[in-house]
Image (tube, rainbow, N blue to C red; front, side):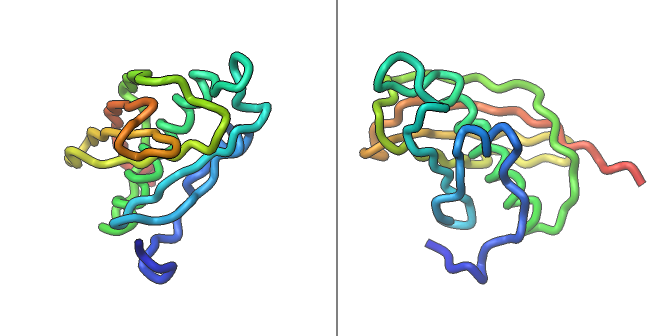
Length: 140
């Protein structure tokens, strides 16, 4: 785990992710691990995470990992989703969920990421996602 001096100063939370209660848990190998506690805002059927909240956690973790890497290499880009595919593997129970994104390809114009979400056992993910993101140049 990195200490605070090794972490980039980036804005990683959107208003939507804040409304779900998603927050930064810690940094691992230069990438943020995001967390969301089980609260009413993320509940679907009783005592289970709503699939949309799980998808929101995955998306937030993916974008956070990409923003952290872009900050590390001092690159500025406007991020726009190309596509996001979520695989729901197990029901999210009424406990804290975590997610971490990993960049599989960082190109000049686009990035490909994989993201995993888990609860008490990281080796048993509750959902995964593949994300393709367009990285547009900021307008001058």
